[in-house]
Length: 193
Image 1: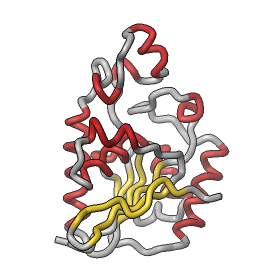
Image 2 (image 1 turned 180 degrees about the vertical axis):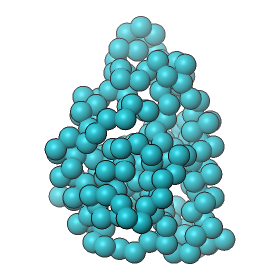
Image 3 (image 1 turned 60 degrees about the vertical axis):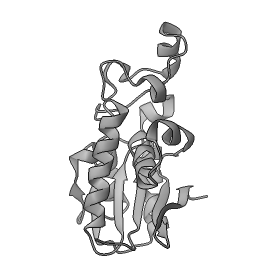
Image 4 (image 1 turned 90 degrees about the vertical axis):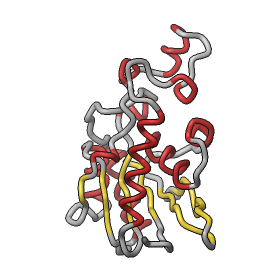
């Protein structure tokens, strides 16, 4: 097991739905032109850093971000990195569901007809276990909610409580690491200025 593990998290660049605030789970939409520029900013922030393993979500917004950032030729598609399956919430705004169901919260109630937060956390746990078997740092290209849940699982915090408190911008970099033997969030939500 790689006890000195670093897991670098790269959220994909902007899409039309991330811009509008629509929930984008499994709908496979492309990056916007600005999202492509953001992916190029990830390339600058990563500056060619070498990783023992690079994994990407199978969805095109993550794969394209990975390619533009300079890691497309070494990345392995990891189905467990796909975004939360939002069911009936897909393509909708939070405000729309709250209007229909006052008091509803994605983090508390989950998406109607979608994947439970526990199922997403289980997928995140499998990704972490895969990362821990690698030598050297690992880079993941994925999605906002999935990465927030993965970070919560990494620090062994309850995802329902912790993940909702971790804002994550498009085309951001975060690093999960260890301080002595404790899993910590080394840096979070870094974007190029």
